[in-house]
Length: 278
Image (tube, rainbow, N blue to C red; front, side, top):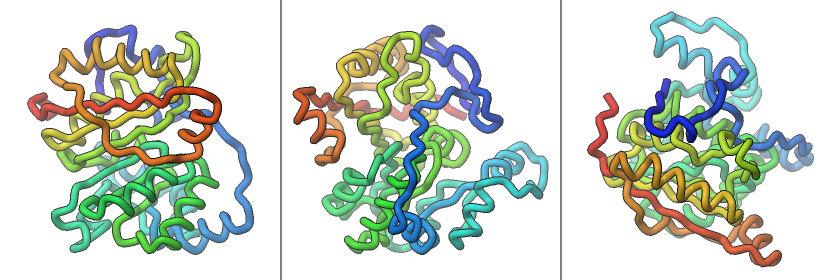
């Protein structure tokens, strides 16, 4: 499990209550119901374009406890959609020869998939995995992958992106990680719930290749200042450097921000690759 050092005020204030999430949720629970078309997409397309993880199986394997032998929610979802269970985020296995020589990108919290699909269409030298907990968003992305013929270079997972980085991403396996318009959790009393926190940088210090990049976009001024503070007080002293962000495309979030007069701020942070993360 990832550990934190540095400024304790930036760390999560208490451990989350979920058994397999030792941090507070960084996203708001949205109970939107999937439409019939979205349910059909989840049922028919997740097997081809989805990546299903089993938390207990992977955790017990890493801790040497043997077979999981349990029937948890992830296992049931995978069987319902005929999706294979994955114990690592393995780009070589996911994309095979089609991914050889391509840069590896992960988008954490892709919303409805607008930016994920546009990025995949624009950057043919990349392969993409997107993580999103919002069921209708995952369904929309699946439909977009199918409609635009992007299945050879894009996969999606209905999973917490921090959980995937912590439990499944292998060392030095990613080139790009994008976090676009994460839930702002306004107010300092909720700052520990924000996605961009020291924990994210610690996880990426293991998962990114030397020179890899984290890109963040937000339309919330308070969140932008929070990102600057986390970088200044935690990441920069560890060797991270500012850089240009990975290309971002219009989405419903950026368009809504523009319509309402809010500025979209983009950040890029380069991982030096010199941090010891044995």
